[in-house]
Image 1 (cartoon, rainbow, N blue to C red):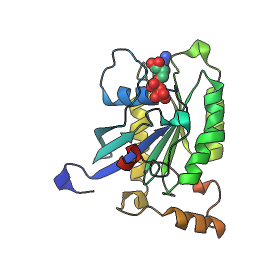
Image 2 (cartoon, helix red, strand yellow):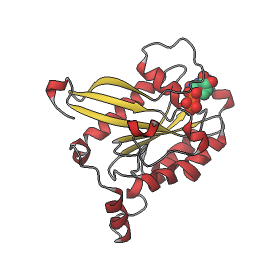
Image 3 (cartoon, rainbow, N blue to C red):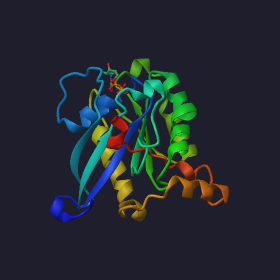
Length: 218
Ligand code: GDP
């Protein structure tokens, strides 16, 4: 809900997705906490809320983490519903996690997309492990260009680019009027219909970003 009475101008739902172990929970914790005393594998982070001012607007970001569900590939459409932003995360030291962005996560998004304008960002995490890197920055950039999303490399451990990742995403969302309207998300049927009618190509069908909502946990 929007409204200055609530202490913010806009409320955005953001979803983190990607293989288990790429650092989704760590990114969330790293962003939420201003300092981080060492990372540990985190299981069971559902969501966290952070208030941020971007472009003069007070934003409430509700950021959802898959909390391990991705291991079982049991994310559901309700997880993906009505997100304004989605962060696709891979680990720059594990090629399979990058391959799975294409083979698994982009497909999940397209299947469950409810919001055709949703902004997505591809994030290569763990850049602090430079000597173990197997995915070059150029590969990340190339994929992001093909897929039509933004790209950043970061480290949840050193916090390099972490804030930027979320702030940039929020900034991009603010530039899309349809994402600022309440109840503006296109229904899935509507998207399918538009795809069948040829109004939406695969590239613009991107937007399946997911938002986890509460029913996902039950
Ligand atoms: P998730 O399963 O995607 O949520 O991944 P986690 O956040 O649980 O992280 C998996 C493992 O990677 C944990 O041992 C983290 O401490 C580690 N990790 C996460 N982010 C980074 C990072 O940026 N650098 C390094 N070196 N390790 C990280």
